[in-house]
Image (tube, rainbow, N blue to C red; front, side, top):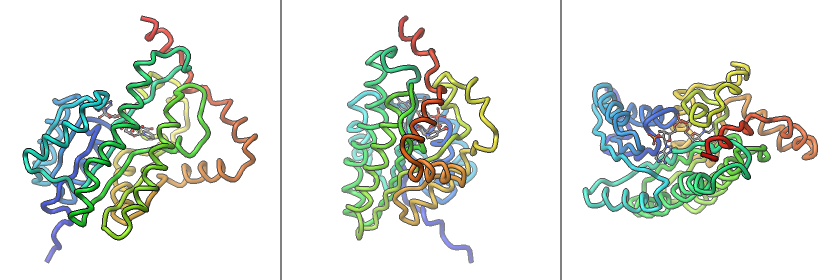
Length: 278
Ligand SMILES: NC(=O)c1ccc[n+]([C@@H]2O[C@H](COP(=O)([O-])OP(=O)(O)OC[C@H]3O[C@@H](n4cnc5c(N)ncnc54)[C@H](OP(=O)(O)O)[C@@H]3O)[C@@H](O)[C@H]2O)c1
């Protein structure tokens, strides 16, 4: 007899589920029998995904169209779900983007938005949902970081690597704090992954020049994320090439690593300079 899917009657909340890696992670959780709470701004995308997961896997999906750059959103999400007696067993903090261009050329509102979406909301959602998971003796948290969090900061996209380093360190601490209560916390660190990320960042043209072998697909990244959090791994870097890059960054003399980073101009595109001047 086939065994019951382990997610049966459990619920996973995934932010940034309307596209890319978040959408793929939602599909993996649904395939494992988790009901879903999907969060992003584009409601139509979430509705289409809810139809797809119901048709393919028969799971229930609750949609919340919300902007995580609003500081009130994490608390509102938590209160709305509590009012509806929807308990969250798995949390995937995934929503994110990069503000390209040099720091001096960007608007502070855009940088503050990045910190709110990719730092504060990740931390606050862990803080809100983590205690209930610990009390019930089951929790799975994936915080989507990046290979960038393991490398020195690049010129341009200034706060991106900083935010991702934060996410890695926070996840490592939370992972240790939850030993013994069956709450696993994993920082997911993909490298270049096909999604809408670089269209939003405005550097698709530069990215298309990169060799195909360094790219991964969202479905592979998502499956690795799921398996890693179920195994209780605090950090996962996706793919052999990305692991090799992270290893080099740790082992090579730092002067050399910083010298190599100085050659990376991909995030320095002047998009924000013109757009932000508007
Ligand atoms: N793609 C890569 O190469 C790569 C590499 C390493 C790490 N990552 C990380 O992976 C995560 C997912 O990125 P992706 O590559 O899948 O990019 P993506 O295809 O552009 O998806 C980003 C998701 O974040 C959501 N989002 C953005 N701003 C939001 C906001 N203010 N409020 C709520 N939701 C918001 C978007 O939904 P709406 O627009 O509908 O709100 C979308 O669902 C990010 O944290 C990113 O930093 C990506």
